[in-house]
Picture 1 (cartoon, rainbow, N blue to C red):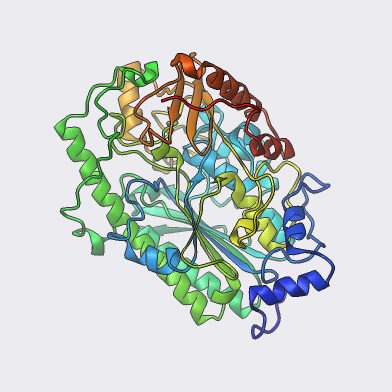
Picture 2: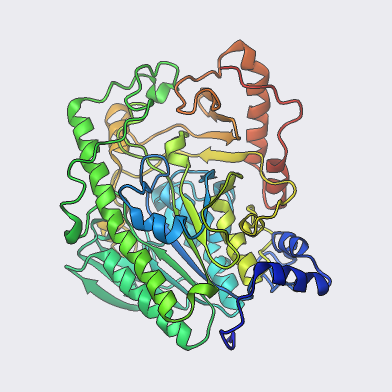
Length: 546
């Protein structure tokens, strides 16, 4: 067990630390860069030896991952969720251009655990029937090397609370606990998406909860875990994954009557007037009717209400860290597994598209050496979580990791060759219409319920199917090439709401060709080659013509 020793005097001013590290013969920038490079062993990371990778050694790491919380539609609007702003935004750094490369729960959460794009985890969907979900991740042996196993091997006490991977525990015992987790509290039966009537696997014991709101249970578990870890003087990694605000976005009873008159956000892309320029799978979509818009409004209000309990969770975590003397020794990351759209481009509520609402997600970080009220514009993504946590813990990630550490950005450095473009990828189908039953006779409520958009596509096409695509997002454009031959290109500088697809504009022919090649290359990258390919725009890349 790793002991940190006395708390007093551990946290120093960042400037003094930089000087200390310089005297030791190693600059902070060099050690940070080395921490993001692949290790010699692809499955067993080792502790770094080139000096600290954060202002303090062996800090605690708290990762709060919400479900389907978008960045653009008011999910973190300070008017409605002021405690997120007060506790996180005002105390830490916000990443304004933070994305997921594939907007779907299980692929994103698999990327989070291993720091790999979906084409390397091979998890593109939520369920085993389409070669995705927990069962595939487990069968592929990918649980044997995750951020949990790396940090546990380095002496961290690790815990997961809440949602793990879609389909868990299909194909295994309900009491199964994946490698690397010192403690485990994850739903194994019942209806966790509804927030009531579920059963948790609590360290190998099945504990039913009928009438206790799930986010509140996670808050209590988090409080107890922090208190235990603090008494043991053990650094910890706490991964808390509430199901909110995923639909049905059931609020806690105490918040049922809030936001009664809050209007549904309607940006210029809402119920888009003309979608004839969009790909075939959506170019014939009808305008949303009054009933659909009313449904979207009700869902939006419930999403806000369900997030109030998440605010309570954040408040409990921070209060407990402060009470135990751990707050100044802890990094807190607040994020979402994917975004969510509510009526943009005529689409019913859902995700999994190439559009900004689905791909852009919140990321707020507070902790030692992290500036308050600061905003970072650099391109970052969910593929960066695992190498970032590893760098903070002083662990060198395996060679298979595609992402890069965010620690240099958090410490206000300017890392060379940062990401210039981000891979976007998707493989159909997105969600199975009915639950699959594995060896355990899995409860269908554990599987992610189809979003209204999924049901709408199934009604029109007889199946859940957005065509596979690969694409790339840069600072000023978004591009996607579908397996069907359709293409989308948006000049974001003049068209931030992606209203005008200019892929077929003759003036953009050379640009489209270059982006198609770059996207295909990125979709085949692995490890260090991903970071190399992302760092440079294609040579002589033409401008985007609106």
